[in-house]
Length: 153
Image (cartoon, rainbow, N blue to C red; front, top):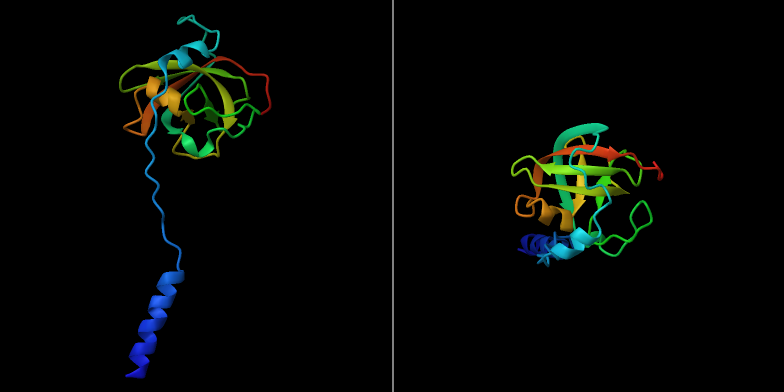
């Protein structure tokens, strides 16, 4: 009788001390369309020379890093224009096109992402709204380099 009771108490003790996954349901505030237009890089020509093209999967990141410095030193604004790439130099200007709906945004690379064989770029929440990819979370994109950056690698 004592052994089952002791076993039961130990199970409860270990369960109480174990770590659990905590889900944090976040409601994102929509980015203002004007903010995206105001901060867009100064490359407006749709016929700009394309220096390199990549096709693959894009994801977006939002509130976890909001207000923190990016790899380039800029403060990350989840509602603004920001993109992280595993290898492009900081300041590289790219056109990212959602291959499902053909929406595109011209943005600077200002952050670094870890190498992931399944992703080619991480985008800010503001860019994800402009590309209409928030619901999906990840989408197939084409990334076209319009101007090479001169910032750190």
